[in-house]
Length: 257
Ligand code: NAP
Image (cartoon, rainbow, N blue to C red; front, side):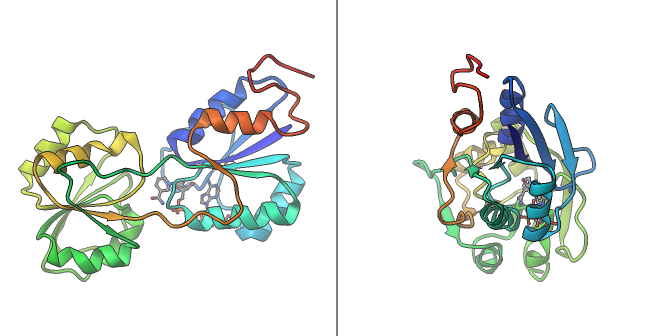
């Protein structure tokens, strides 16, 4: 059985590791190719877009893929919609592996917004010195906010348009609470702007914001494609794959034909 994992997340790498250890399964991970030094999963990897739903459908047929796990980032909505459409067209089973979002705790002051544009709209009324961690592809939405100074943290350098008043920090998590608190203090940050990625590796900024009593502008996730089953952990995704007809392996890993 051949399984395609749409990746770019820690969960996708964990799933590739777990599935690669199973006899009878051949796993290929797909990355968009956005980062210059991506963290690679074990096993076969392909890099680059497929060319929309039609391109992916053709690729699934040509590569004889039997099942797809969409383990992309919760905000990679275009890829997820493309996967739902292509798998439906080709008749290949699709599972979404999506970690849960973050939940507000006592002492948090979160302003939930439905989109990046909405985050930019509420920001000037929320703070003047923002830690912005929504990703380099979102900076254009904040470019017109001249009254706000930004500390932008991203993995890769952004391309213009970017905010006029900004300092760039090129860093990849995981981050610690101590480090995040020191960062907020050193730059006199008065608001944190983030997407609800749910990633444990970058959750320390929320703890630090709580400790410093700062508001957080939290961008909600886009909805998942209707009718596509989803799980929250790589282990549950393994159970789904190994439970498919033709997988030839038992969910407990005891092997099979
Ligand atoms: P997106 O807007 O949903 O995707 C745009 C296009 O990029 C897709 O239509 C597809 O091109 C290509 N693509 C995306 N993911 C791909 C994959 N895993 N394999 C092959 N092609 C892929 O996605 P995005 O927000 O730019 O994210 C790109 C990648 O970075 C994703 O794989 C995601 O898991 C990862 N990532 C995203 C974020 C985020 O905040 N968005 C954060 C961390 C990691 P075609 O239409 O040509 O197939």
